[in-house]
Length: 166
Image (tube, rainbow, N blue to C red):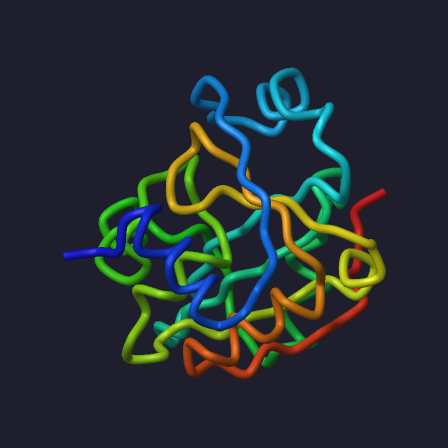
């Protein structure tokens, strides 16, 4: 059974990660998130759950305004023919539904199947905001604590300057 938001917040506490969580109406798109969570300080982020032709899985985490050029991104990670992962694969791997994708879902990837890529520009923000496994809440942490959490989940994130579409 996937971790709950309460499990996640308890894990952050156990790791000594300072966090603040806000409750709001469920948001499914970046536009809805801007409307309902734009008042929360810090960088607001989006997450791309991708699969390549070889079956490799990627979680690309970036600022919500970044328009990632996936064609230019592929060679940076050695991926072939990237596409968005299907909802069933997302749930089976990260334990979340579309609209709730978050780096916090790595708590559920106990087999370390997902390769994690963090946007360099995002990691320069003072604070970052992500859903804590559900899209009716937003949790704010520092980039250093995000990195610590991801590593505590057994993943080795790569920080890259992401190519953007024009």
